[in-house]
Length: 100
Image (cartoon, rainbow, N blue to C red):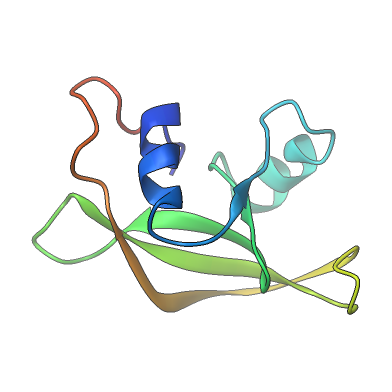
């Protein structure tokens, strides 16, 4: 899911990560591998936020796509997407400031 800046800020209040800027050189390759998403880096590696299957369309789960391969967090190894237990509420973003 590609998120607006308002949704990114909302999500970041609920889980500790850093968004990968759209102009980062790796984003083109990440989009090629995983699709058009807003990507996040955290202590576990690379993740995205995807809407949950619940009736609440305004919540999303953090999905890990790649894990750090070294203690210095400089190299990632992709793996099968793993849905984490972290769910973020997307409520509170202004209308029109949602998913792209």
